[in-house]
Length: 102
Image (cartoon, rainbow, N blue to C red; front, side, top):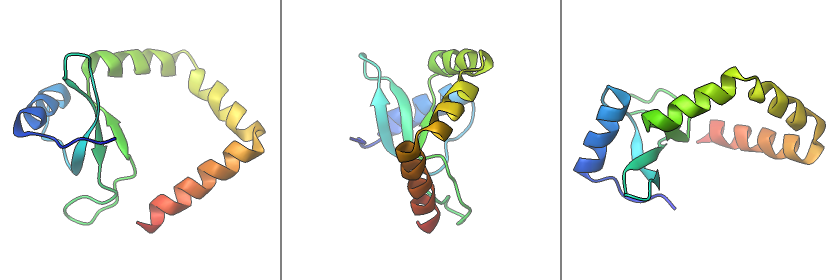
């Protein structure tokens, strides 16, 4: 469930990203201390341009860990697994199509 983002949350996210966040709909995940970890974003920015990232990881420590995992080649493994799973491939294809219609 996506919760509302307070002004304090948005300031924390700004500090985490090093820039003003765009298209924030709310906070999608928080740490056990309540700090924002993930924001939910609008499918289109204020200027109407598409923004295809629904959930955006903002916490620097988690971003670093995801980067480490990506550098290890895990994304290639997962991409291969998706390509071999017809049900999952159909679901992700439908989800991608749905996001383009928004």
